[in-house]
Every structure is written in structure tokens, then in C-alpha cells.
Figure 1 (cartoon, helix red, strand yellow):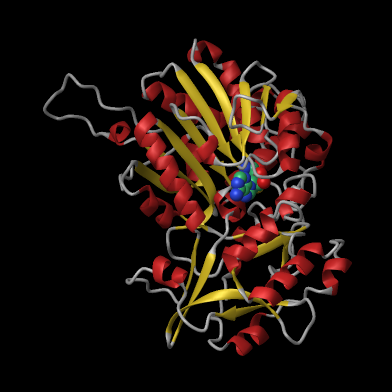
Figure 2 (cartoon, protein in one colour; figure 1 turned 90 degrees about the vertical axis):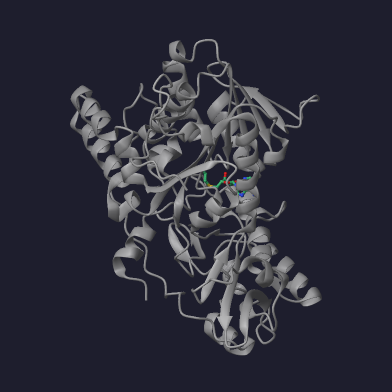
Length: 478
Ligand code: SAH
């Protein structure tokens, strides 16, 4: 049983908050640092049955334990059931698939995937994220990048790469800070590179960032789209991080890694087994979880011998991406900031579905709901493989406090004339910072070049030490 507090904290994450009406209408963008409006505390969705109980070891028992009502529900829920039919055909023809394969199909299948078709953030109203709650969030991140750029000796070019940019709001807020601090950036050649799998969301990003003036399939580039931001910064879109050109780069992944496919494993009396998704032979087009009858390549590759948990989730795709970011930072310089809900290698069953701000059975009506799992930061740290230093994870409320959110709030409150704006500022601050809302369950984690964190040289006093990394209270060198 998950403790109530933990559940409530979890429910305040990305997929639980109704989209503020302002986001639908196009939020009025204020000058630097005022808070975006938000709409009062939303009703909490009902709690779902706990999923953390161990899976039974026999496939038949597993079916009884975690069967999901899909089938007709897809129709009732407004989906056309095409994804379910596609999966059912596939499962009948070639047998059960891993949870990772199921998640990949459900989220990013080119024709019927949740992100591909519905978009998820904002438009469909399934979830809302910190940048959509308050523009202060993105502005503080923009300041983090400028501060790191200065600490690293003000390189003459700077690429900002965002993975999974949603509606483009976070990048928009960062670019506004870059504009306000143009005198600090001086002649630095800034470009933006967005890695986005969803054509629907990339269209929304294009409108947010360029007013919709974009060129598809530029001839001489690996990008699938390019445009110019409202303040003249070139922006490129890619399907894969590999396509982004090399160079000194700041990476950003906010609520990106939790959307990547996970493998799930269960310890049994016979050893580790992988949780798979299968079709229920007795109920047409209904999906169920089963356990692999024997070990799978994934059980052999992803379970550590010293593992003590009985249920483990691993996201190899996140590992590959972090390896790639770490090599790029090692070679070309820069930093990566990852913000997401997650844990440090301690949690077990965190796979969840969300639709219309409510928990949703992960096997029901695939393609119509967001699927997500907590990010395992200990795994990301391991995947950096010492190529870079890592900082964190540190709780969102600590990171934002260290970045000066309290001071900014005070300034904004002093400068705002009307009570409604002041209330909105206080409300969005509470959403981001309250430990029972987003303050504790979201974390910040960074990859930085080793030289950035070199401690002061005691012998050579002429060398000045690197300034501390903003946002991270303690420099946790791992
Ligand atoms: N960062 C945004 C949106 C988070 S939702 C915010 O905080 O508001 C997850 C985002 O990741 C969406 O834009 C989704 O389309 C994108 N995404 C999911 N899987 C992806 C993948 N494999 N490659 C690239 N983008 C992906």
C-alpha cells in the first residue's frame, strides 16, 4: 500500500493537474518574472488500486491479478480502438511483448500513438507541467544556463537542445531571459534545437516559438523543420538526438525521461522474470500482464546481481540517451539539466496511465492515455559512466529556492497592482514549491564536465576555484 502522503505527492505531478484555462486561451506573457496565471487547486483524482503488490508467478494468476478492462472501453472512452486492434493482431500473431514495446507502441506509434495523435500536453487536457503553471519556472532555468555559460568562460557559440518540448513553453520562457540578458550574452551565437517525436506537438511548438513561420524539410540539414524565433534565434526540429549537430550545448529534459519505455521485472522463486503484455485468450481484445516463462535477454542484461528489490523497472532508452549526452558534453562542453519525478534506485512499481487528469489503467484503451514511469536517477548516474560529473537529484523546491524563487516572488508581489494577480502568483508558487504538490516529487539532476566541479587548488592559490553550480545546494560529486 502506498502511503497516502506519497500518493498525494505523486498525484500532483505532471499528469494530474487540470490545464489552466489560460493555457487553452494562450496565456498572457508578462515581462520578466511575473507568474503565469493558474486556476485554483483542482479536484484530486480518485486513488487507483495499488499496483505495488508482487505479480503472481504463474501467467494465469497474473492475468487474474492485473487484467485490464480494455475492449469496449476504448470505444466508450472516445478512442477508436485502432491501437488496441493493432496490438491485439500483433500479440495473436507473435505472442506477448515487453512492457517497453507496449509503451513505445502506445505512446509513439507513428499513426496511433498517444503523443503522435493526441499530443497530450495542454491540448487534450490530460496533464499540465511546471512551465505551463508559472513562467517563473522557465525563467529560473534560463538563468541557470546563463550562469553556467558564464562559469564555463562564455563560449562564443551556444546550442540549447530541449528533449520533448511539449508546447514549447519552457524554451519560450528561456529565450525571453536570453533576450532580457542580451547584453550579458553579447555576441554569443545562440541556436535552439528541439528533439520532438510528435508532429502534432512540433506544430504547436512552431506556433509558440516562431508564430508558425517554419520551413519543413530544410535541404541541407538533418532537421525535419526549421524556423526563426520571435527574437531572431534559429530553431531546428529533429526526431533523434543523434541528428543534432555537435558543439558546445546545454541540454534540457523536463518530463521527458518518464515518457520513455521501461522494462519491468519480477523476482520469482525461479529467479527473475520479465513482465510482458499479452492478449487475454478468454476475452476478445483485452490485454493482460503475464510473466515470461524463463529469463529473457533483458532479465540477463538489466538486473544487477546485488539487486534487493522484488520488482524493478529499467528504462534502457533513457540510459542510451544519457550516455550520448555525457559523451557529447565530455567532447564539446556544455551541461544537461534533467527535471522529472523519480527516485534514486529505490522504488518498485511506478508504471501509471493518465487521462483527463485521472489515473488510468495502463492496459486499457492504449493510445488514448499518457503512460509514464518514475525516472531512476541512480540509473542515469550510472549511465553517465564517469564521462561527466553528476549533481543531484535535488528536490524541485530546493532547486528553485536556491535559484532565488522567493526573492522573485517578493519583487513580483510588490510590483503587482491587483489582488487577482497577487493571488495567482501565490497560487502558482504554491503549486511548484509545496512538498505535497510538485515541490518534493520532482527532482533536478545535472551532467557537467568534470573540470566544472574541480575543487579549489590548495597548492596553487593563483588558480581561482570554479564558482558553485547554481541551484544545487551541495556539490555532490558522484
Ligand atoms: N517538456 C514538456 C513536455 C513533457 S511531455 C513540458 O514539461 O511541458 C513529453 C514530451 O516528450 C512530449 O513533447 C512528447 O511528444 C515528447 N516525447 C515523448 N517520447 C519521445 C521520444 N522518444 N523522442 C522525442 N520526444 C519524445
